[in-house]
Length: 199
Image (cartoon, rainbow, N blue to C red):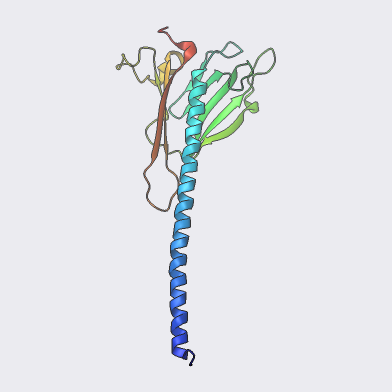
């Protein structure tokens, strides 16, 4: 019977420490990868939910309760219109706009008669984050002759407010990452029901 020598003891400690360090490294790497994947998916799901909501509300565009034209503003990175998005039977003022890398939604509910939409009453929420603003527009606008009319579509800025009947929405999402990842692009189009001309 004899015990470990000092050299054997030191060697055993070294081997044990190496194995623990090796296993810890891979465990931490796994947790980081899992955490990134989970956050990446959460960001994409948030954008998909925001896109679904936006398309649903654009479809319901109608005149404001104060008699205003259905579309207020139609720019590349912002779109404002009237629609009942609070489902109370009254028409709200809705605005989707890009603020930095966040796509936001602003809603103003109408006042009592005489109806107005005070800008200071706007409630703003974020519906998508990490939106990449490139030279490509988020919103594109088309008239009632689309897709047959490819000459006048997409509409020029001066034609959008009065002639838009179909809206295409495209979101390019760049989730934050220390590694290089490809962007995720969401795209959908919607016809404005109340303004259809081909019924």
